[in-house]
Length: 193
Image (cartoon, rainbow, N blue to C red; front, top):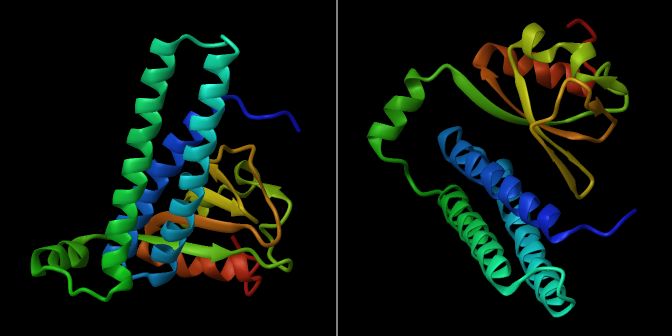
């Protein structure tokens, strides 16, 4: 596998920090500790990416692959992404510390018909080895897969061509009545889309 460029790393910091904000708020809104814990894991990953980015950027400046002004702009962008990741961790920390939500937020949750869920795909699931396009999960269950964690790698905004494998962890958003259906499909309890 080829080595990642500084542009690739910067894009990964951006995508990961955006996902973290979504996950962090979702963990609060839906009172989900597992999702909050994912945010903590992702924050450690962003820290690693951030350090790698700085090192590679300085190496590229030294090799004259990038000029100093462009390097400074990219470093500022990476630093901003890392700060967003830190803020997302702080939001998730509210869930992990069991802080009571403000009544206004609770009321808005009751009025919302959208849920956010995390499911692991069992080897017995009909989801295994099929693409999101083949499955039409969003159409059939109402649940839109917004990210997939495969071991320690993440796929953000998966496309219809993204294949689901056993042990993938799917992060999905959709109507409350579609959540259990997705859970049953992922666990292998049902094979009816």
